[in-house]
Length: 302
Image (cartoon, rainbow, N blue to C red; front, side, top):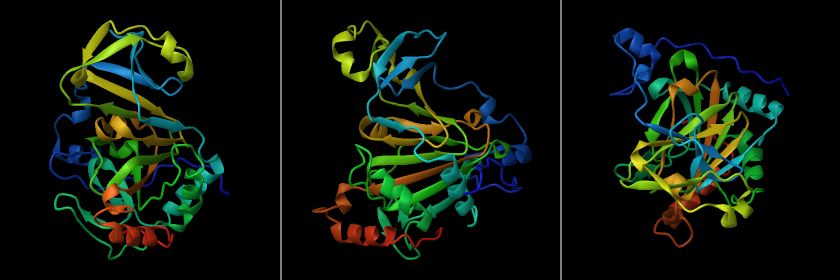
């Protein structure tokens, strides 16, 4: 396979931003202070520790040494090799990338969906791309991903020259199922998590033991912090796979800040069907048809 490359694609003169979304291209055209120069909205930063599954107060912060459980995150490093990474991106770059918001480009392999009206169309959807067949097979080999059958793949291309980012959001839960799976390619980045719920998070002394030893070692909570003032950073190495479930999938919004894109990054997100489209669900037949198309692996970007 070809050697890995992180070369930035040609910076476009046009952008795909709409409404309040902006990128470096349209900000230069409009003038004024770009939003990324404003101070971050969240006051307290915690960092997710994959060894313990806890969010730990950042160094030199008011909550250094304090932590809280952050369930629903699974991080698998080196899910693909450098050679596989380079080949995947090479095959993606053979097809056109569409302009998207906030300086991103995208390739979609999935049904056309109107989430507001909860309607979808299969016209034009021919399946996931052939080069994803091995990735999907490999997903099912990991604990927690048994039976994972994606029905949609979205490739997003980020680069610092465009000021690429994505605002905090929750993925749809009407069509998309419990597990949200993303493969991070070409460069490391940080996924930033925030939650708008009222109330406080109870903090304990940050654990240092392996997860199985935490039950007897965690000290009772003795501090708290307002949930709305917290941001949890999940470091994502290149070639790593991230799986969000439970609270991390449905309650904590996720984002990629512009400052965390330092080189070209390609993110491949796979989504499975919700229970409504699964066996016994109200739209089971449609779900079966979507899976049949998706797993034919004959797709081109729609």
